[in-house]
Amino acid sequence: MYQTLLVTTENKTCIITLNRPDKLNALNQTLLSELKAAFTQALADSEVKSIIITGAGEKAFAAGADIQEFVGLDAQQASNLANNGHIIFGMIENSPKPVVAAVNGFALGGGCELAMACHLRIASENAKFGQPEVKLGLIPGYGGTQRLVQYIGKTKALELILTTDMITANDAYILGLVNYVVPQHELLNKCKEILAKIHAQSPNAVYLAIKSVNAYFDDNKNGFEEEIKNFGQCFTHNDFKEGVSAFLEKRKPNF
Image (cartoon, rainbow, N blue to C red; front, side, top):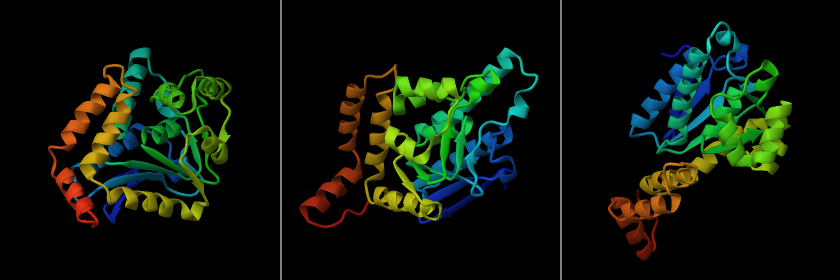
């Protein structure tokens, strides 16, 4: 069905694998278009509770955008390309279903930006992160200048962007960019372990928690007001009734 992706579903988790290993899973426009389609389908599937995004092979999650596609673009065309990336990555960041990046190798440029758009990042020990765009006379265009600051702060974000230095998985963990670092053969299992815990919770509350946390970074929203509103919305959902009943009856909830 897809030229550049492998998509499977197991235990209510949709696993989207970027499948251009010969190009280190570089993000060309075909891949981004297919990623949007696959992600939209996963969101619409009531059997899917979560999504994992990873890369084919052992070398790369995604080693950046496909630079060949940049040749010959004028400023407006380049802005349109960046805007398209923002739309797709924004859809991932604002997904009502939790999204985990299983980073297996290089996550550079657009690959790092894709990983940062996910809600959680689990890295294999060989993973490396970086935003090397200024080396090409460019800047990050898929949200990297904003999300990297959110995760690791302005000082370190500027250092990585301006020097184009890569950081190891352990450095990324210390900086707060990734949640866990594990041996490569344990990467997907760690993602599934975390998602199994999330699957046991109220899907509605998980969505509203994601929405409320994201509101902190949205200039058009007051995060505290968003939290108050979403807290109230919890009380209108059957998940709240089941959760409270299960608590009072001293049993596990059945969401």
